[in-house]
Length: 624
Image 1 (cartoon, one colour):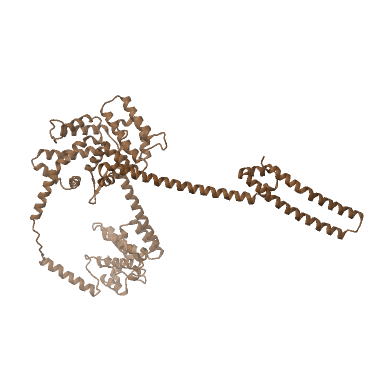
Image 2 (cartoon, rainbow, N blue to C red; image 1 turned 180 degrees about the vertical axis):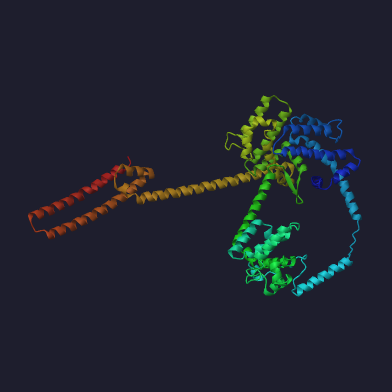
């Protein structure tokens, strides 16, 4: 069946061989079946065009039904009565899966003539006897060509330039030391390659101008332009010949120190032209132009071309071109992907897999298989299970359209589908795997599209689900029918357990981070906020109330009390030192004694009252 579908896809390229076989077989069912299949493909292509035309769809559907399906059809395909009635009931409006029963019947019908044709072809091919025969051409012309070839080889060995203008110039020998600098990917380039790429030729000309070597390229291009001029334009050819002679055949270029030819090669060119006098006054002959052009090209390809190909700028341009080529291929692929057809790659060719599409649609309409597939896709993604439900609801909507219900019932169904899958009140709004542009188009044009409002969305969901159908078939083939759902439930339970373990691990890490952050903030408050501890201000009390528990505040007050006592001892030592200095410097008088006694009394008062004030501060900070 797969080979037959591939052959039907390439039937036009094969010269309609299978069609001719069915027509010449004398079997009307085979002939009508092959004609129906090709007309059905035209009907399917109408759904994948950019703009959907309901009138053309309806006309093509009525044509297929009246020509191949209905009773008394001129090209009856032998479809069963139930399939006829089913197609007739769903004929208005026509949808893509309208002729699925007839297509399945026709493919089964065409399998017999396909088998016969391939059997006959194989039998005919086996009768062909393969005989190997070696023939050698021996004639007058062959002997002349052989003599010319030997003469050319002898001249090449003697390093004698070929004087025949009709023969192409010999290949230029490339210096290995220069071409070794060129990357491996660019060693196949030549001057002809650059001539076919105008942008690279301009870059090459700029490169030569930077190295003061553009005369070789200009000489080659001017001579090539002269050779391509038609012979009937004698005036233009004469003017171009004089221009070439004045610009290049002088002692500044070809016959000078910067010549691309050696001294012997220059003398050979001069001998071909009949001497220096004839070269200056007569018109240039073809052999002279060919030799000059050959020497200019030889130096270009021998010296300047490998240097140009080895530059980083050239490699960067080629890399950019490769990226642009990949982008262009991606754009072409995306443009074909917009059609949203379901394709399968077979023997390096793209072919529609009609049989698998029909089987997948029938499976989705089967409640048992659909439930199994729904559980299977729920393990693969978040919205795939909703995609199965959406496809089923759209099929029910199509049945409502075929049953010719009133407009209110149909619009109520559309609203229900939109509220559940396209514009849901539960975030996210789009509950199926479709682009946002399609969802927006459904909401904006639901009145204009009529019965085809969900066409593109259903095709997109179908293509996504169809990719998982082979995996589901492979999974189900290894199990009994009764054990499919339990196996899926076990896989789902294991997946749920892994998800719960992952969530618990994330919660544990979050708690650890929060605990570490809380401890670090407590350490900062405990060791760094001395101002709020020393002072009994309202700001310090508020910060302690926000940062910790009452136990932490008591510990902070006891720590600040010891620090304060240490400060008092330092202050008392300073006062003693100050008193000693004053007693030594002053004379023993009553005023001095009075001052000293006042200082000692002040010191004793400070020593007595300060601990009480600290204790009162501590009591004020304790919670009540």
